[in-house]
Length: 241
Ligand SMILES: *Cc1c(COP(=O)(O)O)cnc(C)c1O
Image 1: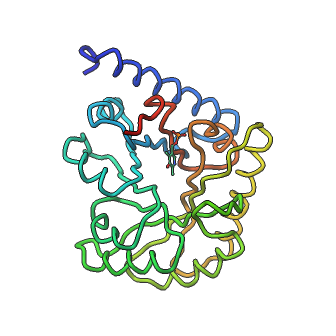
Image 2: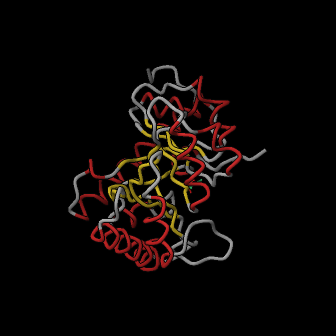
Image 3: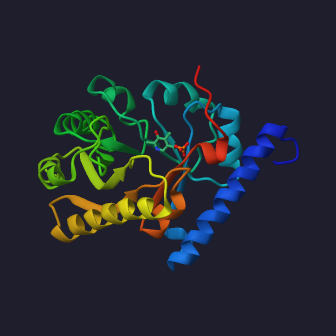
């Protein structure tokens, strides 16, 4: 019900409508259907009350960065029919706590973490976890993600693990300023995605390309993103305590 929202909650709802309009515009411009792109609300640092505003408004996918934060908020969320993804860097010692609690882990970037997720998943009722492999497309030293030239080897190796299903790729590009730079890096990422798809690695399905955040989701949609991860453009600037 939207009748008794606080001013802050109303602002979140207005932001969501603006983002949704921009996604529709980008899809139209790209000649893509709106349902080819999933809008994920990135909920790190956001209170359950504000997250529920967007869930009640029809957002069907949320992303959290930290295992502990997600687990502490989860019971207060309106999660019926909502996909939950872990998008932050995952340490092996946290794997057991998150497997079985989310629908997808987007931040796999080593054989080590993939193996830990696979082993833990085999012990769950479902028996596997959907994952994306994170690619460091900008080649930045400080960033997590696998280098593009190491991606094929990583995929062939983790494709053999029974407890995971690789469903695509995720990337966090470097901070870019011009439209052209943003599109160029997303173009490169999409090309990598298509190349891998055409190679047909065993047990590796390339159907999800997760790229685009608040400052560049329109460019990502124009270059073939199938899942955009939007936080501050919906919820406002994050307040870290
Ligand atoms: C925080 C975060 C986002 C969202 O960032 P915004 O710029 O606020 O949209 C997307 N992806 C990842 C991996 C993040 O950590």
